[in-house]
Image (cartoon, rainbow, N blue to C red):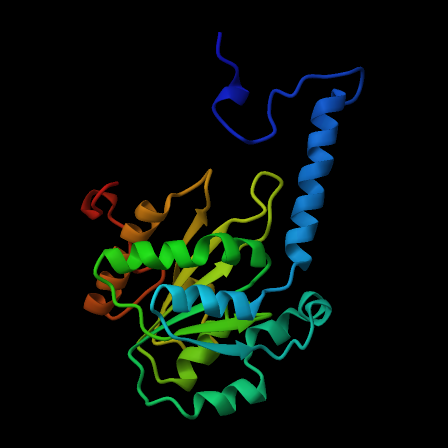
Length: 237
């Protein structure tokens, strides 16, 4: 007879050993916890990411948040939401407006970026969405896309970011879309496609969802709670 644990990677139906977990389940939990901790502290290798983007034929530009270190990033979330002065100066060289901005930020799991960002962008490109310059942001949080989009007078910002690691997935990737990004945007003004990893949402399925949301945001000139995903309109769903 099938067990609940046959259908999910979640920690269910683990059994008992007295008042505790069986030894294999306990050791597995400790390993997963260690992997999640490591993912949070792992730095983003900007050089290797730039090389990976170049291998796909895409140009990239390095940026940083106001958090000068991983420790500062974790202790001061507000610093991760704003670009550094050096990055703002670098953006001055770009023509404006830049209608669509694609950015990649480490977030809380640089591991997710290293494992999935390039593959997801390749899948998105296959939907017909052009991939221009990719802005690689170190020590960035979701709201840093507002600062970036405002600096480039963008209509739409698409941000790939490492999600908070879980005990089942230390490398989950999320994608946030924000129409007319500007500092002070709320999460209600964004759309999110999350749980992108090998045991979660596949690259093709995620790319189709993102492409659909991009098209609808341009048509309706909005993102957020007013923009609904219609699964029956997404190819391959």
